[in-house]
Length: 170
Figure 1 (tube, rainbow, N blue to C red):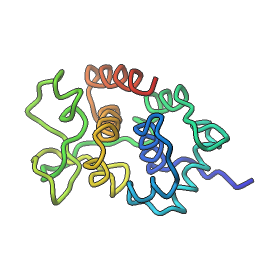
Figure 2: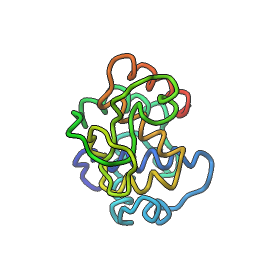
Figure 3: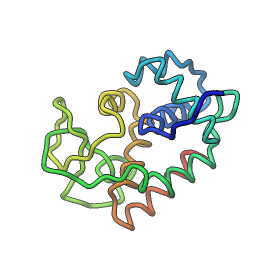
């Protein structure tokens, strides 16, 4: 058995991409292509997720309760983020649905991205290819934005994000 050297930020990205696919079949090469992450890194990530108990040993099913708990209780501590300077980018956290409709704010958070159309405080994405991948999949984008809310949001925003994540991940 391979050694487990801990979870990495891209593991969250890969797990949430699988979650976004819901019941659609997927292959590791599809995840690699859609996320812009090498096939070998996707394979290693899935191995780490199985070892951590976030995926079933068959490497096809998410352990949704464990993943939800990890996102809620671990993500803000393992991958914390403090908003940075004003940059051009793609909205994240409370600047994206479903939180955008519930929270009024003049201070959007964005993933820095040259093709972005919104100016806001920079939030480093969990993977450099995340902004591009998010533009291709609305469900995945919303899941990642909810996770960023857990990383940078205030108490009220985090509480709403937790409820939305529980609803979406089952």
